Length: 255
Image 1 (tube, rainbow, N blue to C red):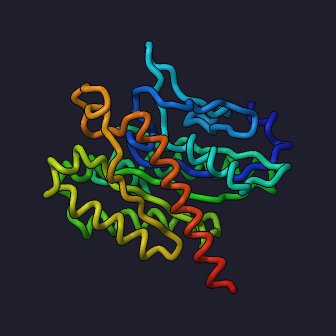
Image 2 (spheres, rainbow, N blue to C red):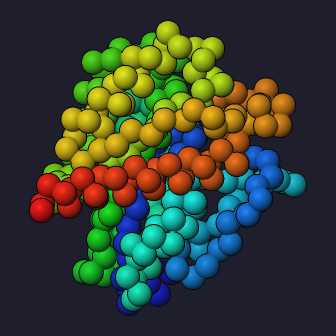
Image 3 (cartoon, rainbow, N blue to C red):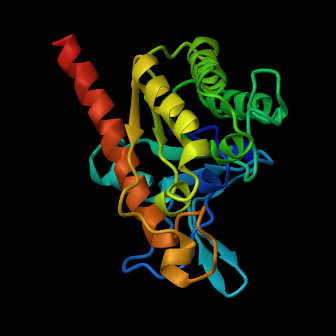
């Protein structure tokens, strides 16, 4: 399957972290994402498929990379002869504290293998963004600010070093406010660390999540930790605006 894409030139977006990055949002949206031959997934099993929402029983399950992709195309960031490849590296329920995302841990190693695979498909392929949403499990484990800051900054810096992309935009976001509001004491050290990594890494931006509903707020499911489908659409748009802001700031410095 991979050989069929060797003639394509891809802009590559890495989507990593845990369940709110993988996408666990349900409910109706006014304008559902429409799959197209311009936007593709590199899946965790290293197959490539057209980017699309999941069918989960009788429900549609979404993730924020799809609305990010729509904005990327609508904003004219994709050249006419190129396509967008989203690396779907996120896995629900994972953390640094349980040895999933450290530099020597299996999910981070697999993510790097996915990046290598995507870049090696065509010498003109290029990394354009690292989109990250993670930390709920670390917060539940009462991880300290310093520990989470050091772990996340090491991940971001390693990606930039290994793949020789020092200006790679890094975007990360806040937790669902529904869950965070009930768990503020454990959430604050982790979110403060994420926010500060975005500021310290040289090309980062932090996304607030105020006004974005959880599955419970939208559907009454009892699931307060995950953004609903509608919220994930909005979150992807916020991630894109943050990404665009990083590039604008970089261009401003260059001028």
